[in-house]
Image (tube, rainbow, N blue to C red; front, side):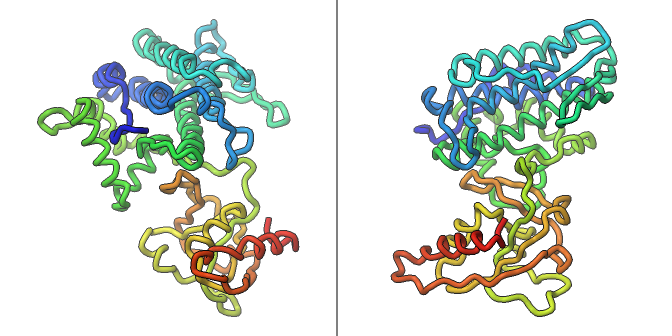
Length: 384
């Protein structure tokens, strides 16, 4: 983008949502849903330059495009709202999604479809019957075995919002990580993750503040002329500390399919036998979590952090053991990495291997050599 200030929540949405600052659960859920969908509207109206960017085929997520993720996330809201428009008993099937539709390839059509869903959510907020969130919905799914279960309207609205954030995170990977498009720091990040980063004092807090100030000064959105927060900003801040935020678990969910193993690179060989708890690196200690990589990320990690090393050790971590404490989080490049929020122990490690390469020929090619080492290790069947 040519502008120094990324796009923002639309003025109409900000004004509409400003009145939602109450304790009504329906208003809170719809507030979050509209705010998330409005990020998609802003993306296609103000961030993407042309329809070619809608259909760019991701190299990191084969088969994925920005347009497909927008359509897919919208479909879940659309199917739920369509279900609620029919007489009871409410029956819902998320497998009945549309594919290969104009919304995937056209920015104007995508904006129109997202706006239509936002209007339907506003209509539900204004005209929905009392107790709508507790209404029972029969959900049918194929997993691949047919499953039928009971849920509620409230739970499915929360799910649709979280599901959309998850797909916005993949849009971030494609747009920022592969196409170099500048996005708002909050795009594709769950509110609980934003709060966690604020509590931990990670540098993105300052970046987010700069974006908010930039927006406020340029467009009069989140910050008014006196530097005070607008109603929408104040309500979102309140929402992040509300007990109900437990529903907003981190949207940086595991890849599909989930990896069997993830990897930790050590500069030296571990002790024998393996230590009960592995010592933290300086970077892990500073960041407050343990940096890990999936197989496809090892080359980038080695080239960045071990470019001058001729030998490292690679721990093979059983993902099924650590997955509960793993958060899949977006780094500055837009790529999503696994971060472990507890100690790494010997019982987590399925094995380890020393990787050696030939000395780099010159400082200008210091990151070379690791690719052939990883290819050989994968050929042996050790990397999965």
